[in-house]
Image (tube, rainbow, N blue to C red; front, side):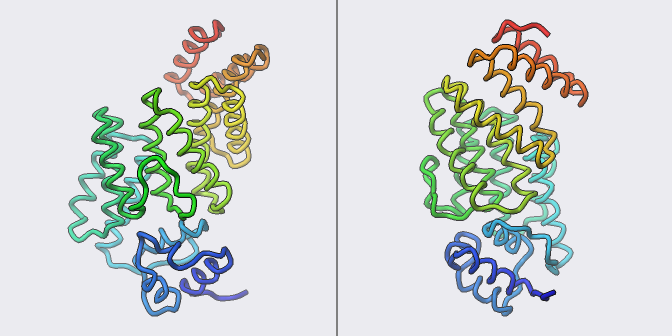
Amino acid sequence: MAVYVVGDFLRETRLRKGYTQEEVSYGICTPASLSRIENGAQKPGRLILEKLFERLGTENNLFNSFVSREEMELYSAIQSLIRDITDEDVAKLEEHISIVEKLATNASELEHQCLYFAKGELARQKEKDYSKAMELYMKAIHITLPDFDGKKPLRNNLLTFDEIMIINSIAILYSNDERNIMDAIHLDLWLKEYMENRIVDGRMKTAKYPMILYNLSCWFGDKNCHKEALKMADEGVNFCIQYGNLAFFPILLFNEGGTLVELGEIDKGKEHLHQAITIFKAMRRKDMVQTAIEWCKIHYQIDF
């Protein structure tokens, strides 16, 4: 079995995928820095290494990065931030923002990106200040994607996990205004296509891909595009079954059921809705059980 150093692996993966150094390094480091990393002449920081792997759409847990204690503390705190954002845990998010700010006295631009994003999530989820949230999201995304205008997909660019999350959050903001739902749909269709064609990292895809499909199924439903909504929900359900994403499985199944009802397949839709509610009960999600039952009664005139 071949023995790789990180630079060899980065270079060989990049060349195999047909990416240039400029594409992979854009907004993360200079192409010259990536060249030195690939040639073993420069040791990358842990966060930079992680983002380079993400741009390549591959696993980044094959290599260790030797860093100082301070760097490791900051990296761990940032990972906690990302988990809070993924879990929508606003209470912990606020706490971890404070921790990262204390540790990030000499933070890199990538670390600032995470902070801006986290603060944007706080503004959106807790403060409900959508203008402030958008300002922070755009500030975050422009650190690595300065050409992104907030609406037009950059289909030639490679994306990191953080960039995907930020763009998805921008799409969620657009979805709050009926006039901008198509902007939200276009952004998440771009992310869907990107994750299907560019990303092989199972952890990364499993964490976010079902959410994008869930969003799309909701937004297509809001536009009364029920066939498209059903397609998104069905793809999401199948993905969750294949990769074991229990968090999004029942809500995608619920969307699938609701869309089937909208399309006139009442019995099949009721079956899916009942299955979703049963799973919510099994997961002890009383809040979701009640919400789902009320939704069915109000919108579909179905009692459970």
